[in-house]
Image (cartoon, rainbow, N blue to C red; front, side, top):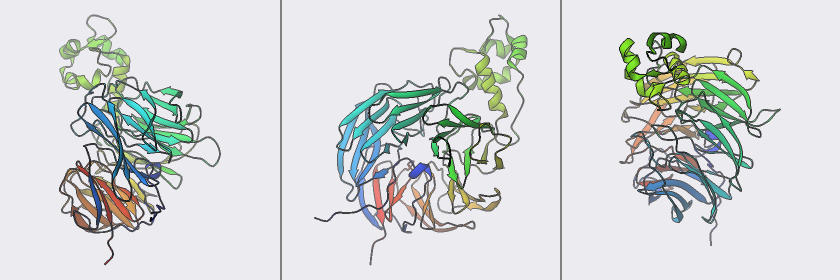
Length: 462
């Protein structure tokens, strides 16, 4: 019997700490059906990315009334076990989202999954259920997207919604809640937490949420520091590199030049609160300032039929928010907005894909195949252009290894580019499917999940 040794893992969404880096893996340039393909396994639909730990691969999926966690053999792609969880509800989802979008996390002994329509569930290596923690329903019209973060003996899950947002820490062995931090000034978000381990002091989970980057003490749930000035809806996950964190956020209506000052709630009440109940009904707003009613669904966040003080303050923040990728110095205490800002770039920003920090260059891929490289020290544009042959939408985040970058479009165009400031496209491959999941890189292999299958690619020897 031959034992296959795996030198590296990809233990969560986008690998180690969501960085998207696969070390010195030798990425093949040509990939596709019959091209450097090691194996292909058909799968049920789902947007979660493959997670690689030991000799196993884990993905999630869904079929009608069931949510799925699937374990596969890393060498052959054979399905080892498949566990079904009855889907207790069907929450509202954006058309580009899925009931199985968050990726799992694994410690090599267990696997931890989060679903919009269920909450958290843990399985052992053999597929035996360890525990489950129902969470929700969530007041998020797009559905949830953030993946769990595993730190020591606990699982951290961010649940940001239009109302009732929170971060929860759960013991990985028992599923018992250790602490819960409410986030009342945050609306919907989809960004996965990243781990910051300072030279001195506690480990910290950093969350990119509405208007603010916040660092939480992993042990206690207390806020260590925060940075104000983010946009109102965060989808990409930040990346940490060389003592800095790079936070990307794009949301509708918040490009540079669209900002406006909205009057305080007290002024709005004086002008529009006809029945003087301390809230604003849609009809009251329409009489005095009808243009505001076009944003009604974004104003009435708690969906109680009226705009209250919190609703209005969140709307004020939304109208002042600025889309950008921002470089911030890590660390500090309390409000570090005025002391830790490094640079900001506001053009050609992706909607969903996270940025990539690789060899002191920041890479971003935007819908339309617009690929941008920035100097990580200054934010200066090094190169910007379109990836010819892959000019569609992008949901998967870029990943890199062995001086190559992989870009995966929604139409499953898998681009391999040379990693340098003056990047160069080496090849555009076509997998002829639909793709939302971010590829995984390990042991000179590329694992790509499409809407219908998981592929493993490896450079074939002549």
